[in-house]
Length: 539
Image (cartoon, rainbow, N blue to C red):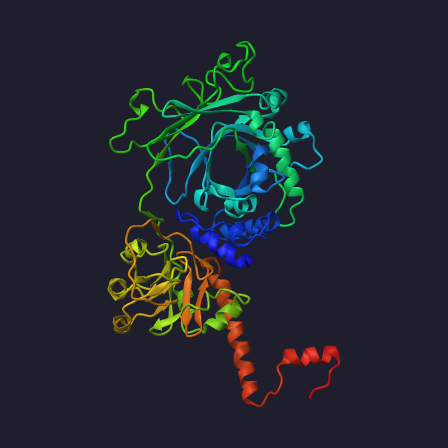
């Protein structure tokens, strides 16, 4: 499998709840080195659309799992500004767009300096600014969590979100923290019933061992940067990672030392302030917790007057549709600058890239130019497109991502007729359309992979207004879409002015060269230069 195809496929399911077949099952030669190369490309693309990398998560920190996942070390994945949150009294976490989510209690570090592979534990401790306890919510874009290490790395490191509890300064009690973090225990509760118990040793003999392993893995990575000051590192799950669902109440606490065979005077975690070592207030020595809204007909411990404590998060049922805030539209003069320009010229103005999959061609209508209004429909569904059409404004181009689904059309003439009535000037999809005869009567440009009479469902989930991957390109609301008989091009909103300036130079150069060709030019300048360099005579 080619890198570009993998990146497109993986990004296309991000935030949708959809899943794909494991990469290693389709390509047994796909290895960890390949996966980390893919991870860097995905990170760059997510950063380009505003998701800033803020740290790393560590996974597979239990050595007993390594043979099963074909790894000799833990794995890691990027965390982003859009996926890392502080736990607060009113925090809310949604399961929208997650596939088979699970929860993991973890120790988290904030780095004050960049650790290096030659550091011992004391040296690593000197790089830590703060320590916290929190949760990571993980997910699997592969059905049944059936993954090898390379699949996990390419699948966002299985990371969905991280929730950080109170951050405690590290330096003042570095020795105590280092000692206690290697020995403490944690108990995980679901609806006030014990779900699991874990020990610091479950993360490679302790969080600092996990951090050291991450530094070593990164030292041998040719594609990704080492850790830097300011990054956040989650060090791996202290317990098993149980599935989560809306309506459940989750919390984690230090168990009574007498209950686990340790003497009661063995001491407390000296770094944690009292009362309550992990959270403000006296709530059963709670570390932190997650709570969900009640589901119909189900009671939870939430009826207690002292529940939930500070730092709990509500996990909500995923809605069938997710709407992003309205994007800022680019100035009209920038949009008009692209009108009538050949897509091939625009691609040249962007360095040779920007065109969608070559199979997306005009089904009906003429060329188009407008502002992208995106929707992520997923396969065999158009609920998101129905919602997006109702949001359309004059000058918009509806862009519907389906994951290149070819089993049914994503729309026909009626829905696109509604969009046209609202001023929408075109439609682009990586899927199929139907009702060809009536589409031709709409006088609305339609670009798609093809035509099918099959109809889609209208159940969701889907998203409106979020960045999508359509035809192999990331498209966000506010980008400019231009299309003609050659195909479809997307110009990112942040590159409009730059591309327009380049476009004028491309037009001038093309016009000058065309005049020379019509005047009898027999050899392009680049060919003549290559011939001179090689010393080859003209034939």
